[in-house]
Image 1 (cartoon, rainbow, N blue to C red):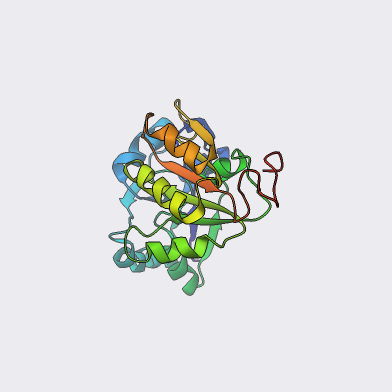
Image 2: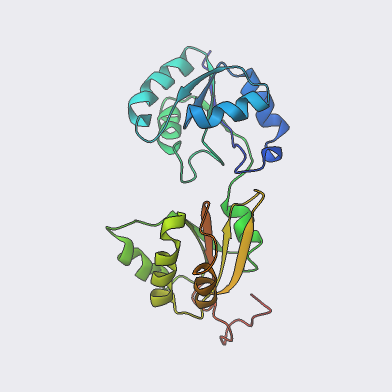
Length: 237
């Protein structure tokens, strides 16, 4: 009898955001794959999880996946976690999931924490249709992708690191216009959680004199999402 791969979301900040089911699965599986074992160790200890933990990250996932598939075929139950959030969402996991499915092995994905959902919902921008871009290309292909997004009518969600936030906001102002409505969330679920809403120009001005720390989620209105635009009023956005 083959085993099963469990994809287990972990808190993006507040430890209370883990689910009871996630804790149970982590305690019941035979081994845990973690993006960084040093990061996961305090979390697992906090919830009394005492299992074998192996590193599974972007630098070894291709090489390690064949061995993991072998373990699963031998009947082992395995959980995959990342440093924070849901596996495979801008984190390792996609390649392993694909290889496991190729071998007709069961996968169970638990619902749970991920940064882009609360950032989108509390942005005040339309949530009925949206696209998740994750991290945009840093160099090659970046300008091409930005030009494509300039015509995007749906709400856009983009991840960004703190040292690139101001530069990205400058680029967005050039591509989307300074009046494009947006929302920027950082340190989600943590003590210093913050969400700033307004036009790209207003948000850029704010962050020129305020803290740039933590992971950032930028939510941008679609093409017609400008203050005083003909298609949307500020109240509707």
